Length: 180
Length: 196
Image (cartoon, rainbow over all chains, first blue to last red; front, side, top):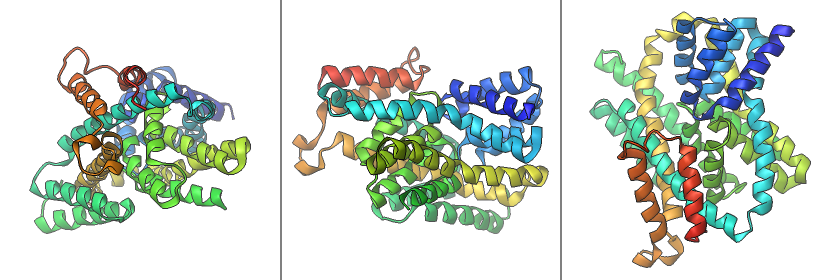
């Protein structure tokens, strides 16, 4: 029970200190999980993080579940996960109410008008960064273009594109006789 | 009923969004289109709030959507319930998948099919986020109601976007800054130049 509580609190701390994307949490995880709590070695943590990136869902959540499971089994995974999302729940719930209450004010509208422009640039930067990792040859360039155009111009659900792309990856690589 | 549907929508997002928080954006976009629970403008606000508050951005956005949607339906208690339901929906697939993977760790990491699937998944995920990004840009930098003309362009917005792009990509001193700094600057610029 004590260990479960410890997992919850440690990952709540990791959640609070993770600002933005999952990559920001790696140095914090190293300090808390490896150096302070000794729940995993440096190498194990890198493995969990790598798997967190290539399994569905939020990287931070995946890594938390993994460390929790390895430390204290099923319930360890559950408590670590609840810990990592807990700060978001509290902070966003408090903030969303305030933002919505003031959203009709002119200066708030103006501020968000500027902020939304910034969001455009942040997404653009994220896409460019992803492209460097994802588009490694002509085939992946074609997949990128097909999915981008298909998603933009048709109402087909992203779910369909994700499933098709995974199948295409397996078929193309087996057909080509090589491994990614 | 609405809460069940919301759990299901976020469950799907958690199951199919591969590659971190930004990968949830195309799914949130689809939810906005399909259900009308929130507008594309509100979604862009949520991305900004999710990026500039503590916690993983994907979780923050799910909580925000759930909160807002619950509030619109049932007031403050609905908002709290909605925030919890959306967040749990998002993380449930992660928990299930990871608990399974953790049990078969070695064979999963070096599985040829998993690696091959990611050969296709990575560019597809980038394509989905690119499409969502273009939609966000069109709603914010072009006023579609004014038709296709120079007057339809949000000139102030485009100038700010170009400056931000240069600062985040080309200027050595500023490109390492955390996104929250640029979001803060943009909020100030928006207020001063009345960009709402």
